[in-house]
Amino acid sequence: MAEREPRRERRDDRRDREETPEFADRLVAINRVSKTVKGGKRFGFAALVVVGDQRGRVGFGKGKAKEVPEAIRKATEQAKRSMVRVPLREGRTLHHDMEGRWGAGRVVMRAAVPGTGIIAGGPMRAVFEMLGLQDVVAKSLGSQNPYNMVRATVDALKHEASPRMIAQRRGKKVADILRRSEPEAVAAEA
Image (spheres, one colour):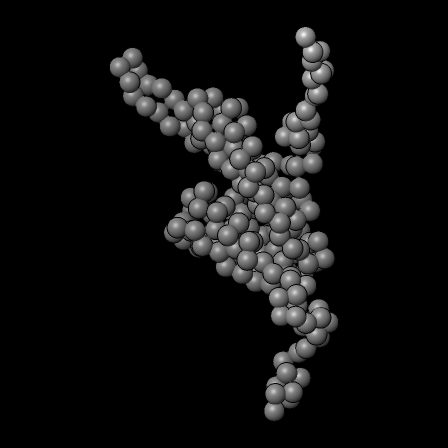
């Protein structure tokens, strides 16, 4: 009989990623739901978690389970899988004002000068802190549901565009886009 080759150990990348403490997480909301059955009530829990590296990446997830810690664990795993990268100006604020929508939730976000801090409501504040924003002014209009607020905030952040991205899309240099002011543009067109 031929001798079998020794089994090679596979590296499990997912396990390695989970062990690295590069992400911070924030529990935004916990919801207890009950189901009435013949013997009484059965309780379940739903958790909404926002995860980020505080350097321009953020994600959110929701998890449901019979116990709170298990629901939080599921939500955190889902949040890590749904990360989005957001370009930040000077690593502290947004490049431009924007608006995001999700369902009945609507959020408005504005770039702010240094020292302003995070002026935003609960679920939006959690997203901004996990993203690493330091100066931003935001307002939630419409739905106060934390799920809709977080989704609307992430929707707006997905549409954030840096001058480098716009220059690349238009086939120009970043300096051409940043230095061109309104009066010069009008004079050039005339």
